Image (tube, one colour):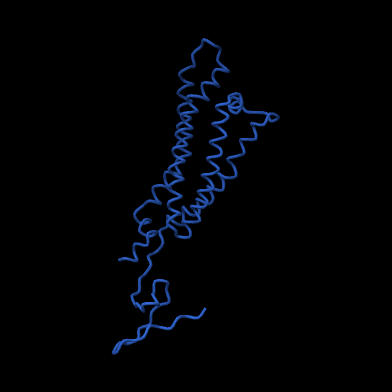
Length: 206
């Protein structure tokens, strides 16, 4: 591609070589060199991780739906869901949301690696909605699925032992924390001031 001619020299001005950078404005002949800062490591790290985690969510999330088929042997957990229309609708909906969030995360990762502001926005949306979804899943598991499962094993009129109830709460909270660690870290780091300044190209105005 043919380079545009250099700007005309002013009388008494000595020609100074200017690096061929996107920051150099050939139209105005500005010779002010603006140095781009080093890309924050969080952008590269979470850009790659978004692609990996998003791909796992998009591919693996729909797999449990196979157990809803009538001809497939179900686990105790899936049997409780399959016997309830409300829980089945809830389960399928959450799976669809997770797959959609996985695709959003992939696109957000591409945006981060391309140093685009919308990559940060999509990553933040994913982190926010995923944490909210995890909270909803914990509540539904403790108030809907767990009591239904216990009613199938404990005779009517007997109370659920406190150790089992506390174990269910502990397990639900632990699984929720394990699922929420990545969205929480993603939200924290992609919204840091260093990433904000870099993606906003605020250094161009300094």
